[in-house]
Length: 157
Length: 437
Image (tube, rainbow over all chains, first blue to last red):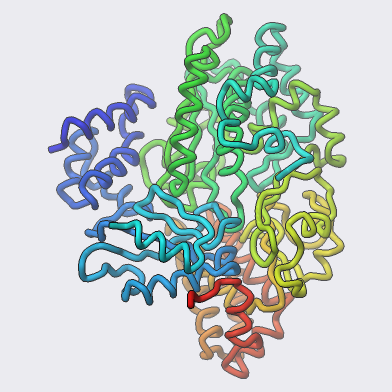
């Protein structure tokens, strides 16, 4: 069951599209539910499908295609580091190494206290700000040298 | 940033993106002119054609021509779509346009809607830039409140709705038909063309898709005329253009310069080479464009024709600068991984081929390369290129072909010596990332 709050949010998204094209709001609906529940379980995917009148497998197809959806639980803070070439030339890979060492995890792993998950990201369209990181899909952090990384981790409480 | 151009130059400072500030800069003047003077649609498209504005998303297709493909008399729904799904490694201009001048894009899209008889538009915004998406939504609210969007815009009989659609992390959605599939609530797999979007686009209706920077160029062309825009650049390459400079430079960022500006001037604007080191290679148009060695690149001007003549592509204007600390094998390995990861899997040559490319470059980089590997890589690219629905397969192949063509000796060194020509600590120093004490 979706909460009233998430229904309201999804309804605002559905209103952007022609009345007979509710399915267009599926990406936004999944993002809203992921923000609310932390990740997208089969049950959540089913809830979204029921609400938008879609087949669950059609919703799953979308959820599994786009990189920013999490189909397994992640830590309270999911940090995605871009290591693509333009970022790597300005320390993206080294920034990721620094994070791995600090957190004691590799990519796609979560710290034992459940606080941090580290992900390797593809181009975020911010190559001039390298090293670049994205926290929980919404907060982009630029020019992440060691000092800035330490500060970011400190802010994540 | 961008003192020479009209997209970013006037638009710095936190509040510059607001409607009131945009109007103070003359914003929405082009739309008002069109509506109040009842400028005929043919004249709008004519000015675009005169301007030689070529699509800023990478393909460089003439915008006026694209708009003229729309069946104006088509009775049902028609759509205008803006492609702000900027995910081509090296490209980060649309983020700055939307951050500092969202209303210029909105105005360009409204004019497009007017010129092509469309009732609705969508701006598809890259997933990772949430704050930019939220800002664009706020800008849309401002425009609606001022009757610049909605019913009977500025008292005319023209109505147009515009919405933002937020992507969620798929490079392939930058391909226009994949983007349409994505708006339709599906996975973003490109469609076979023809039919082209102008006849079968969003929800099967006639649709025109342009890049963010393309739309942002439209108000200027209406205000100042196509000829003046063309004069900003050079023949067949009208206007100024945003170049995103990344990599081994002192001041990475966006620079708005006239088409035809010498590359060496752009490099200077970006503060020159980091640490005063020597330029080794440049990818001039985003990661899919063939790499060019320093000596060729230093002789190029930045426009579609000059870069094409040198054997590469201007693409999206994403200039990735690499200095002598760069290991070209490692650089290619990372790019090949990207295309492997982002292939949508629809066409076998791309789905399987990108995996082959990545695995072979990976084994060369990790000291397990075989003497026949370079021929193997070339043969795989030959079996991908031209055999897929969309351009991702070609995009994955062009870096491989060009890296081997221009830096083949470095690949051979890796295969023979099982290590890199550039020592690890030199590469680390090049990245400028300092370990905290």
